[in-house]
Length: 146
Image (cartoon, rainbow, N blue to C red):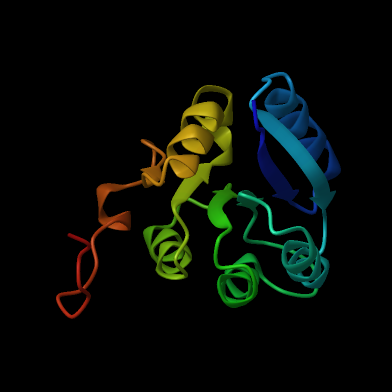
């Protein structure tokens, strides 16, 4: 059985290790690497072309939002799932506008990490239940996917 290849990007080492350990317990996931820097994340994504990138927003050298924009160009087949402690609707909207498939609130990871990863890998959008509903609401000039 082929494993889904995942890259974990976060500048907080214990978070990366915990997430990686949770994912590696399942036979369907392979964590390719843990990256703590925005520019390094872009470079590694282009090199490794992972199936999924679990991406924090607050990173050194380059924000997660900018990392996502660059990865969309360099590794368009990689799905991006943001994992952030930020609950601000405008931040979640901006993250999703990069083409990311989802937004996971870190405080909900114990219950939502695996469902979020599975949804993302299946091409279904995932947004943590604890995010305010307005996080998904776009202005009238934005098209909705059919």
